[in-house]
Length: 336
Image (cartoon, rainbow, N blue to C red):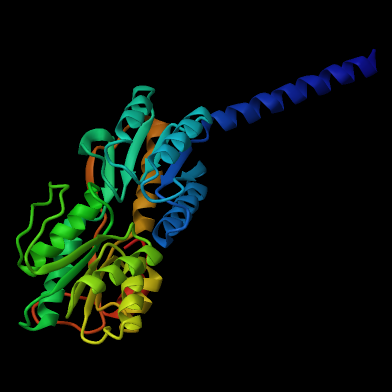
């Protein structure tokens, strides 16, 4: 009798432990993070920040990404897999701001909280909330800097953009034109503005190799380029390589957006004249925090939260508010 009773007791104890483990698993918030790519340094750092925040909050983090910037199908698949795995919050940097909206709606209809990080959907209310840089302001800042650095010389500008129709690409590009004092659409437009001072426009997809090729193509079409706007710092590095290879890197003002650690090094080295620094760790931390709050209380965030932007340059220009390379290095990718 006693061995049988012992086995029964052991089985009961195991059942209690199993039930406890299941309850704990069910109570642990599950949060998904879907970035545009796995390789862009900005999104690599965002993923690290989300993992750190999730660990501190006792949440489980699932991650996924598209194969390339613009891979909507990859992001849709990642979202479906995460929801099947129990994610009640999805943080996403949309690759295709319009095409992703139907999939987000399906998720929200199932009670999943969806927050856009860095890039909004089109329309803006396609997600519950947006945590991001004011990308138009980021563009305005580097436009103001480039105009001051040119010191009154007639502008011959190349823009290395993201790709057509993306809100972030449009906002940075149009903000740059506005800051430079050129004709520019407002921040709500997803169309790239054009001005006679812009002698070549090309898509870089935020990639260094594609940025270099785009710049090489522009140099074959136009001469005497003296300003290059780039969607991000990898594209800026590609532009510089193309200019240097052609022997035309001297006297060209290259401006960009991101403020990543390598980008700030490039500012210090004279590759990039100025960059608008943003803070992906802050975006990720706020997103995870909101997901944990939703899991515990059912409370959802709403609207737009500005996560900040700071102009970083090695050579300050009169009338343009900027911070030093040291400050940029201290803050790069940070939680400012």
